[in-house]
Structure formats: structure tokens, C-alpha cells
Length: 222
Image 1 (cartoon, one colour):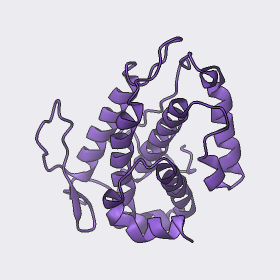
Image 2 (spheres, rainbow, N blue to C red):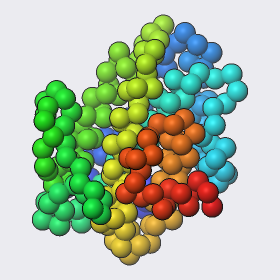
Image 3 (spheres, helix red, strand yellow):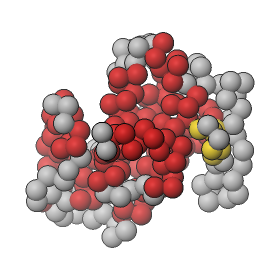
């Protein structure tokens, strides 16, 4: 059973891999308060005040805030997609797209040149890549006394930009299924939170939001 109240299809090719910081990095005031920050996120989300939920708590470290939320967004997107995995196959989605926009995969290491892959293949590549980033302690430090890299935001931005593509694919290609499962409210809430956060810290360029421009505009300017 997953957080949407549905039997998980994560075992059908894409495995749900929740991530959680083992030990908050130290060296800043917020480092000793990782669990409190996570509780604050949960509390503000529960209140329905998503605009407030994304704001940096006074006196806290921006990098810790970005890290905790990035991991949470990874878990949300990973699980949301897993519930739709049976409907998103190489046959139904032979390319990773969002309407007229097509996304090709490249990570600059294992796959240096962009390649055309099916949507489930793209998402699998993406989740593995994000997991590798999060597990890399030179980017997401987990040991006491190890600071975040000074350009940490530059690592977070491509992660969130690519997460957006999964949302875009779901809305364009699988939203009818989401409605049929009566889970559109949950999807919309997760995406709304994602949009408020990435907008608050300018983490995704406007051009990359084009596939869902109308929806994003409606969220930010109701």
C-alpha cells in the first residue's frame, strides 16, 4: 500500500526507493535540527498553507533546507510515478514526452550524448541518477562536521528540473488515469508544493516550465 492508498506497482520494473538523511551534517545551527525541519515541513503541509511551507525558517541554513526538501520531492515523485507504472510502459509511452515536448536522457557520465528512450526507461534512469546524487556525500553530506559544497544550489537545480519532467509527463499523458483513480487532488497538492518551492528559490528556469506553463501560472497567480 502506498501513500495514495493504492497497491504499489513499484515492483513492476521501477522500485520505490525512499531516501532519508541518516545523520544531519553539522557545522551550522540547522544541522542539529534536521528532524525539527522535517517536522516543520510536515506541519505546514498539513495546514494546507503551501506558500508558508516552502519559506526558510528564520535563522536556518538554506542548504540544509534545500537538501531536506529535495529528498522529500524525490520521494514524492518516485512514489507518484510508481502508482502509475502499470499504465506507463514502453508500448504506451515509447518516448518520454509532455505534449509536444520530448525529453532525451543523458547524464554526462554513463550516457554522454542524449538518447531517445521510453518514458519508463527515462524515469528509471532519472531515479537512479538522483539516488546517486543524494548518496554522494561530497554533494549531500551526511557526516558531522562536513559542510555542503559552496555551489550546492547548482547540484539541486538539475535534479529538480528533471523531476519536473516526470510531473509534466504525468499531467500530459496519464492525468485521465489519475482522475480515474480519484487521486488528482493528491497529485495537484504535490505539484503545487513543488512549484511554490522551486519558484521561491528560483530553481527552475521559466523556459523549462513551458510544458505546464498554464498550470504553473494558475498556481502562482490564482
